Length: 190
Image (cartoon, rainbow, N blue to C red):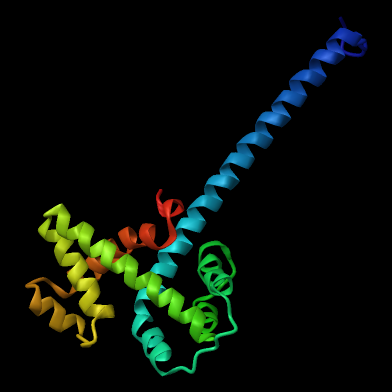
């Protein structure tokens, strides 16, 4: 066959080319879809960990707000639970928006505080039952840094537990990862 001769494609060959191209396109689309789902799952997990840290860091502020607020009884539990769902699912929510959203309603804030209190208790029980000194310390460090009525500095906590100041934040990060699963459920796991 010479260079300027044109080859005619048969119907069978054309059908085969279309099948191969369609399969390649479908495979590429599926790979892209899987990659996007994995990315979305990671982002959701990252948001939940971030939101766990946010809730814990602002715990005393929320608690103070609830203790001094005049409750709005007309808000239902479903509305208040919407705040927790918002923390779990909304990708565009900033830290300030979350704090303001929670503080917008005393009833909503009370439900979230009750949820945090319950999950902190579950987390502390789990750490105690593990008989791991490190896990027990982590739960105590988290509690003393953000939950207890007495406010401690990281330096004071480091001295109390005979650890380095950097270890205080490492313990808090590790505790928040475990607490995230309790606060937001199974989707917080890798």
